[in-house]
Structures are given as C-alpha cells and as structure tokens.
Length: 175
Image 1 (cartoon, rainbow, N blue to C red):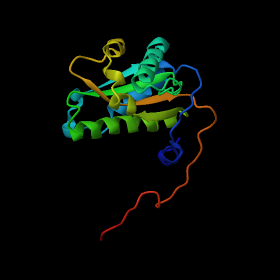
Image 2 (tube, rainbow, N blue to C red):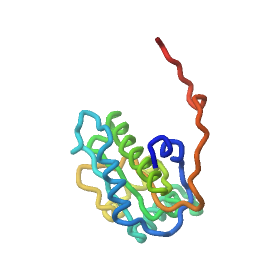
Image 3 (tube, rainbow, N blue to C red):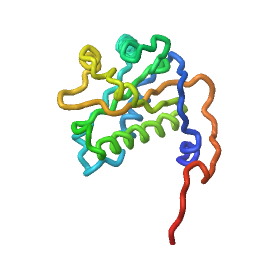
Image 4 (cartoon, rainbow, N blue to C red):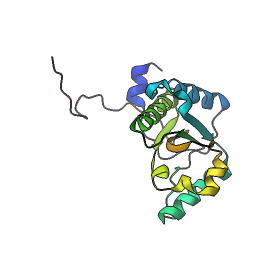
C-alpha cells in the first residue's frame, strides 16, 4: 500500500478478531517503531514490549477493570497484541513525544499490513500498569516506565479511506 493510501486508511480499531499476529507482522511493526524520530537521538531511553500471551492480556484487562471499577469494559478491545512503549524519563515532554512517534509509526505499519490498531494511554494514566503483579508479568525492563501503547490485530470488517480534508485541524500558512 502506498504511503498516501496508508495515511488516509489508518483509523482507530476498537473491535478485534481473535486471530494471532504472525512473528513477521510483529517484527514489521517493531521495525517501524525503531525508525521513529526520537528526542535527542537517545534510542536507548525507550523500550517496546510486545504482549501476545492471552493470559497476560486477560490479567491486564482484569487489573484495569479493578482499578477503574468498570467490570464491563475491555480496555484492550479483544486485541491479540499489545505493544507497550516505555521510557527511562517518562515525565519529560520529549519522552512522551518520542513514545507517541514510535506508536504512530507502528500504527502506519499496521495499516499497511491491513491490520487494525488503537493508540492506548489510559492504562498508563490510570495506574493499571503500575500494579506490581502486572508489571512483573509484562517484563518491563528495570528503569523503564510504560508511557503509551498500541493494540493491534485483525479488525472486524475492512479498513476504509477516511475523508481527505484540510478542515479537521485549523491551519494557516504564513508566507
């Protein structure tokens, strides 16, 4: 898929089929994340953890339901893969920006592979991933803190082109 088509097809998916992603698909998304622009070029300050284990995904969902008190909500939307981006200095604005760039590159690669994806930050913000049992299961390296993530998998239905416009976000050109 050419880049323009990828940009206009990329969308948030919140309902996934149960099919697992292949090792090749995961590696393509990891490569895309590895090639994101990183603040100060400090690639060593970031880490991507890919969780495909259904038991760990279920434990994350249960922990989130307990933390939020919302037992009916699945914060992972049934996705078979959860890509967690962690940073050494999570409070720095450059860390959040770099983590978001990593996720966006992976989003675009997922779309190129005709996969659905969803940007995730709520699990980090509400403390779900701070639960000691969850952090241990996720195997986040020492010294890193999860700051953002992405869900990926096969969507229910097809990805479709979105409206191409210059009107979604205000803009101006100064000459």
